[in-house]
Image 1 (cartoon, rainbow, N blue to C red):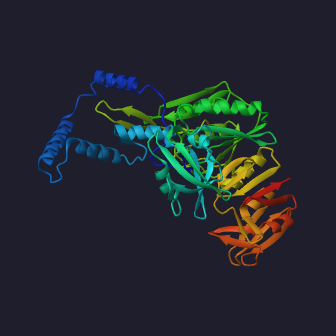
Image 2 (spheres, one colour):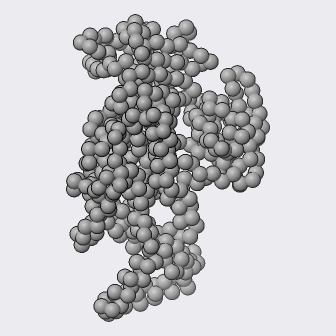
Image 3 (cartoon, helix red, strand yellow):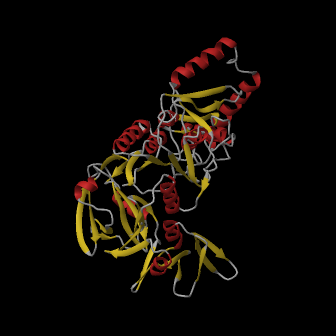
Length: 491
């Protein structure tokens, strides 16, 4: 099972950029050079330090109350060396930690293959992964999880529910679901799965959408296949979604960028001596415009790709400023066991822009997941919009996002997120702090709203507006509810 979530950045699992190369060969060459130059001969002070370390280690092993063993003390010494660098991206992993890290990077997991979202205390299935055990068992998007193995799911968090649905591959789990008031019991067999790195679909009016969730080893191949499908479907403009993508392998970013740049570089990689190692791009070029969605969780390889396509004028960035991780790590296996991930280079965009601790500034700043998607669609030439709102999600022209308070029904009235309604209609929203009022504006006309007047309500910090009021102000917007889901369209 997978929960769609924001990826961590500060050196945590699944969120770094690796320079792909043959590590062992590079290490051998480095050692040979050091030995030939005499640089490998230890100094007296270094030897004394090593003797001191060994002596202290021996005393601690022999006398300390906790009875530390050699492995414990080794780990402590390594951790202290790494911590002294004050670099969150340089890390040591023992064999088990590395196995887990590498698995996360490749987006592997063991479960039944559903994406969950929570709204008003209920946990819904947001998405069923194609080809998964959940799909085979009959799970559907919109189902509410009511029980797991006969025990109620009421009051559980998504994390709690994850723990109950996960398990050993080959074992089964029985899940009770509420499907529009009908109670069903479904059983699925857990198995090892990989979340696709790339997925694409047409949004309408020739606009293609391609989401990239991670730069796995085969992300470049997956991206190219999805792009080919979209092009064969008649795509005339493309939206690439890099939001919440924390990075991965440099080679994957290089392969994807090569599809769009005929001749150039992905980035300039500079080592600690200032040596420039440019990453070449060649062979690509597309006839259609590209828009890239980014946010504060787009990091590392995402910034590498977005920065290059922005520099070459291939793509326009829409969203919020990216994270700002502009350094590259190499993975070096240790002969004594374990792996160390070491920051070895800083990268700069083709035009020499610094990314580390700076980030990339979008061409158009837009807040909010749904608003960003709508703006990207319009920027790509789309004019006809549709949205399905409810059960913890908002689906814009077939693309699903998570929003727990996008629509609320009170009696016979439906209230919809003010920012979503404004984005759909192309209006802007202004806030007046003193009067606690809101103004919706478009085409030189301004419409005031105020909490408490019945037309505007606040739900957990979200402003929602009476749908009928928005329909009156903007006749191009129409809406209606089907099975508890609000359907909106703009024509």
